[in-house]
View: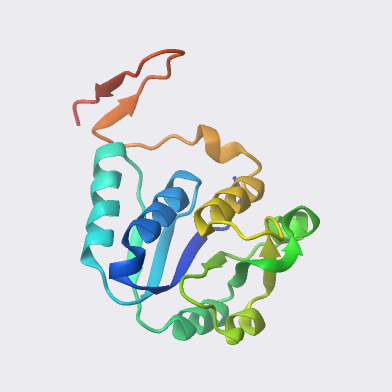
Length: 180
């Protein structure tokens, strides 16, 4: 993988409506190679606890932070030399821009919408990127984008320090306890 890090910014989390979607989005971010995530909107300790529990059980380090104001997150990211990629079905096709994004040495903040995305996000982003120009899930968009960004290498990523590990099999399922 490249020398840059990827973080995901989930916009405007609403616990009553978005609990499972935000959790699934962050699980996908973790599994597909992101170093961590920030979410804005309303604080939800259950989301944070869920990701912490998964990291403890299955290994790896994945940082989750709540920052109420998404605008401050994007501004700070850019001030610190990072670039912002906003996933939207209205953006440039990922297949047309992925090589340019990968070539940049800057850390990447991937912005994923929640409730209606403010127009300012489109203007603040260095890249507005689509994985398809059809309505779809933000979880699938993030997964496809990260898969393209990491060139499929995230599929064989090893997660250290987990309590459990899956042993791949053609039939059935086998999970071993690592003894940690």
